[in-house]
Length: 198
Image (cartoon, rainbow, N blue to C red; front, side, top):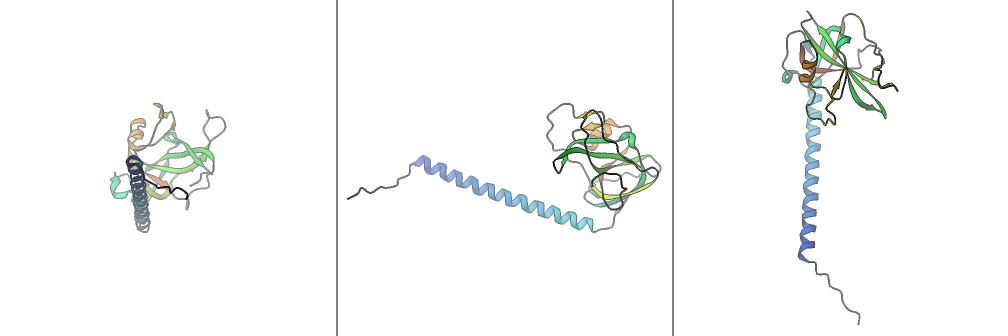
């Protein structure tokens, strides 16, 4: 008669297996929670986007009053204070987000506008040419406060006009102009044909 094999797990393998199962369940619950947060954020953005656009003038606004809201600003672009946010990839092509201030009303304050994405050129010492409309323009888009949570691998986070990341504080320290405490993510609708991808 063949010998019967019995499975008798030891204490340590049982504890390790139980810990693995508990960790897997905890990670699953965390992922479900993150998905729920993202769905709630999307619903909030959609709800705020349906509201009337807030007019952005030279009067300083509070970031929390316009965050994720539709805004509209009238003014003139000021290319000399443009910054290029580096390492922004689109469809496998490296490029930049072009952030340019818009001089509002009487010119005492500006609003930063993320005009869109442009592909980089093969010579990294040169920046791409950006077509900028002359004279007054109307910019519509979503008001966003740039995150302060990012990873920077170098101490050289802002080299001339090329920056790794954008924060309102960093821009205020680097440029001699007063700006609103948010960035307008420019819509494609109504934007000029300037070669930028929005």
